[in-house]
Length: 417
Image (cartoon, rainbow, N blue to C red; front, side, top):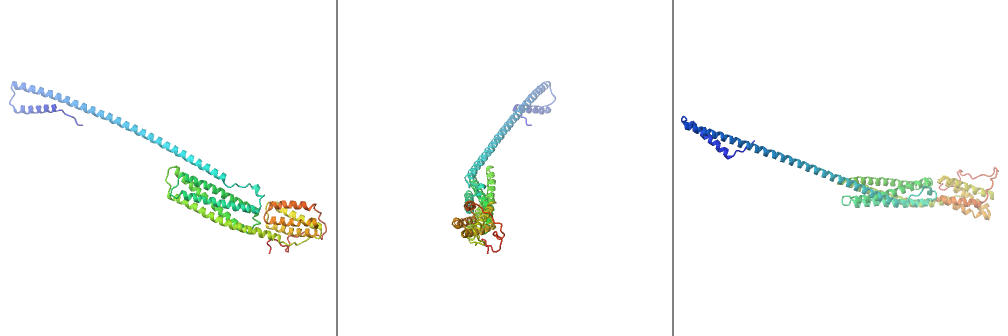
């Protein structure tokens, strides 16, 4: 440790050294000399005491300075530590505030999106209660399928358009995510309704409308693929929304994947539209051909009297009602109705007289309704026709009276060549 020595101390040391040297060179001391030396020694001793006092003062001063410096350094370090801790606390509070604000913003955005989706679903196509399907004709259901597929195509294309607009600048904002999510919800609703209608139609008329069944099944498969594509878009949006909520930068691959999935959904929508239009045109042709074939069936057994004509007419009624029991019409049921209708119409014309001959046209109308899938009208027509026939006669027990054999190979049926 370095000690400071004052100029006075240095002078005293010099004098002591000088006197020592002088004493060694002088001859033997005389009494005056001895007194002088004693005085010098006393002076030297006094100088040494003064020097020691100076040194002690310097040491004390240095110690005091050192202690002060240590106290100052300790105080400074304490102040810095306290400042750092305060800064850390302030930073943590800022972080906590930011996290809370982010969570609040994310919750608010999700609530906004959910509300928008709910509004979109409420405004979308309204499913028809299953109980009402039985009161719809085949033509009405086909028209509803056409409209439902068109709506699904339009809604899916809107998903693609909204996605393209959102990613045009290679970035996606929370508001753009919300817009695409809402369009996806609308597409999912529209696709689901179209699939439901096709499923119900296939259940009711699938065994009758066999000529166009394959095209309708292909349309349904495309709709299923569309639903999968829109679901993939929704999954991508969920990942993007999560990243945005955390303040992360979206990866280019994420945006590219979103665009590709939306474009795939739009391409499938175009396929569905083309397939549905083809099915609709062919289905109308099938209905016309089916009705014409049903009315073109020739009678294979004509009643020989009025009672026989009435019995044949009631057989027609019973067969028609049996076909309606399960809510669907098959090709075999239509063939039986067509054959019995031809027999009943011929019998009424031949044996019914003026009162029953006018009912011959009703048989043809009912047959046409069955052939065109107008089951509600066919049901109503059968009831009106039965009431017009009057009381049901007893069938004769004679062995020579044969009931129509619908399984005979010579019985002509719609579509038989």
